Amino acid sequence: MENEHRNHDNAIDKTLAALKSAAPPQGMDARILQRLQQQPAPAVPFRWRDLLTGSALAAVWWRGALSGAVAAMLLVGALLLAQHTLRTKQPAVSQHAPAHALTPVALPVTASAPASAGCPTHAQIHRAWVGSDASFAPSHPAPILPLTAEERALARLARTADPKLLAALSPETQARVEAQEADNYNKFFAPPPAPPTTNVNDENRTAPKEGEQI
Amino acid sequence: MDAIGEQSLQWFAAERDVAGPDLAELVRDYSGLLYRVALSLVRNPAEAEDVVQDVFLRVLQRQPELAAIVDLRPWLVRIAWNLALDRRRRVRPQQMDEAFAEALVSADLPADEALEEAGRIRQVLAAMERLPRREREALLLSAMDELTSAEIAAVLHRSESSVRSLLFRARAHLRQRLED
Image 1: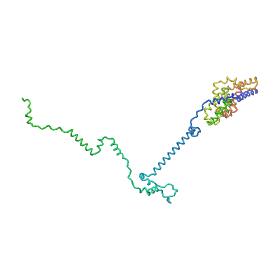
Image 2: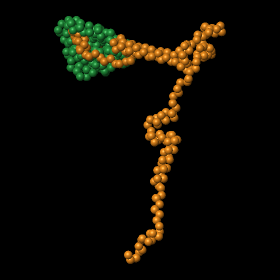
Image 3: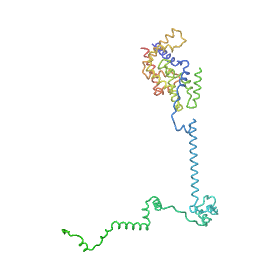
Image 4: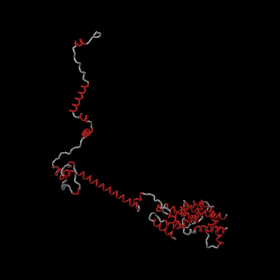
């Protein structure tokens, strides 16, 4: 019995050992590799992260384009800021002032205003401008102001409206037009002219009476 | 290795930079193990080779994800195991037991001993087929020396203690069936 038991165990072990030691067919690796080579390359799923970190040509191009766009935006921003700064430095009253009046005067550095303070205060700037040539420059007439809304409406009317309507705007023309219209009215509704006056006796004499034998 | 193999190795070496581990190295390192795993289920060398090929085709399709896989061996064995189970439903391995048993016998044995040995192996294989599925699978995977009990547990989706218990019962049941 025990011998039979051992025989079965041996048979099981031999079968498992045979399964364990089964050798793959000759050239299997090469065949598999050849088959894999014939397969199309797998589609790589798109990830935004690869565009920023990958080493492929598309990723490099993308990074370059992004850097260029950022640099261009920074440059435009700097230019706009510089323009804005220049505009705010020009005071409104000096638009028609001579060029020499526009040059700001160097601020006097006093002992009370140490260099470490950096930016001058508004009061200092105001004093510097008031004390400079700009305040003594000859005055100029104010610039021509733009038309008001009513003036613009009148100008538009003068270009496009009916002459009659335009004439109504002048009191003299208006009076003349009204007088003419009144005259026309009177002419139209005037009473009929009176019949010519004749002598009653003459008429009686000449006109035969009704039933009278001629 | 022949010229095609060399060419394939070069091609896969060029692909190495694109994604994760080298596929040619994977084929070289794991094809033998995967072949034995598949053969233990389908019992036909040609079918087992097809299973191994299918495994690496799946790997190629998922190559971008390979770098994220921590332990490749149980992952590959699980793919081979599932593909072999699928194929086993079609090929009916019991019909191949005779040729398979003869192929498993050592070529060094004399003809009469080889015949006797093949008969014993055929008996064991037939008894294995009558085992409960979980016990049979645990027994077949335990035949692969390269796999630890933890890896077998990972392939079968069981705990290690459960796998040990399955192995013990499988051997006992197998012995019992051989005695019958």
